[in-house]
Amino acid sequence: MYSITGITGQVGGAVAHALLEAGQKIRAVARDPAKLSPWATRGCEIAVAEMTDSTALTEAFEGTDGVFVLLPPVFDPSPGFTEIRACIGALKTALVAASPVRVVCLSTIGAQATRPNLLSQLGIMEQQFADLDRPVAFLRPAWFMENAAWDVAPARETGVIPSFLQPLDKPFPMVATADIGLLAARTLQETWQGRRVIELEGPSRVTPNDIASAFSAILQRPVRMQAVARDTWEAIFLAQGMKNPLPRMQMLDGFNEGWIEFEGGAAGIRKGATALHSVLRALAARG
Image (tube, rainbow, N blue to C red; front, side, top):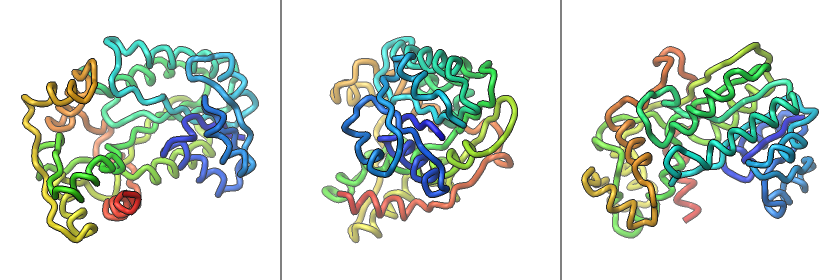
């Protein structure tokens, strides 16, 4: 039995699908019981728990061979990351009390970076979970290819996609969520001791111009990228409703400047099999 948090999202759902395909039993964990209904239909156990409720999380994790931990996304955090620290504290309390056999956590490329940015939330999680007295694996995937979902509308409507990743010809590490889910599911079924860090990217690195070219072919219309000037970012994000855009801006700087990268070097990075074009084609089909 494996407990999967974040199962109603893309990555958590991919982990659960891969485990079910392997014939494993799943306990689906989420705060909204209505969103768990499809998983109950597939024969999964259901556990309703807020990510700050250590008692409910303990019950969700008890008696399992492994727990997949996915922190709820906080894109506009309070200074000091107070929201995510509350989740991390509750999760750690639950993992200690429930004593699952092993734990796999979704972390991120650049979790080891010392410069503050939005991804520092995952670095905090790694630091807090490092002393758990059971096998713990931190899966650090690259930038999600599925982030290009935001690009579909401008590509289709105007043929011009605003890009915060720059320069436009720079190759960035990216990966499909399906490949993340598959690797996480495999890791949950493995045996190891202590702490592991597993880094994952797609079959090849991707430039913003590659994304535009792929959309051109998929949509059968000219599509190009347009770099968004760095000195306009704060005003844009504030206009979109963000209260604290600095961590997001720092994260983008980290990718653009190259200090958000994999820790282990190219030789140690796992490679996913899903190509960019197939992901973008699926995104475009959804509209």
